[in-house]
Image (cartoon, rainbow, N blue to C red):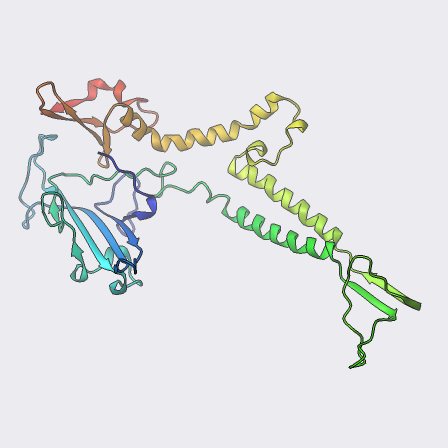
Length: 331
């Protein structure tokens, strides 16, 4: 059974100075917080599920032959499922440095305590699917990373435009030589407010001056439109997708279709990072991080079979199921 987990809960332990996208880390964490429930009397907790590859024995000489390999292996995967009270967690440190002395451990359906439980696997059963092909980084790259600065600039420009529109709609007014109403008690002029139908009597030398900010507002709106055009280019999203295009102004339907070219290329590149998992899912198998794919089958006699396939890489072979000759079976 496969479970999908939010990537924000995924914390791989990458070796210092050896970040290699082609090599899966030997220790990963899945961690998340649980909010406190005062009505039920429960505190907020932090739960961390750890998968780690390690030696089978303490002397590092003990080996084990797994059904899917003819070679003995000295590695196995250990599972730890621990939970801490949030008030006992050091928030300065990272997830990997949490002390197990203050934690309590969960149990599985068989009643085994999940504290370095030997799963009898020579791989970590977690599949990391990045958003993009992770060439130089383990996590890949966010789709918004290239446009982050533009999005920030666009938000600031929209804020400035809103402020400028306020001064344009209600301009600053200066009066000179006007006979203003006087407060009878203090003898001082009353505050003047601009209202509909307001009339101010001016003397012979009276003058009314307003601050016109409409020119600055027009420049800001033009700047916002420029940022939106740049955003469309950087993110490879056409104006018709962003909703900023007047379809009636398009020269033809072919022109609209051609504008989707960069978007189609981006979608195809993003699907490359998922094609391996998608092709395996269509074939009824699940990938494992060490370059294999595993499928649990049930024979006619009810015997469970396990099949492994070589890892699929974009450009090498388009479908895992088309490489039937590469399969090896073990019962």
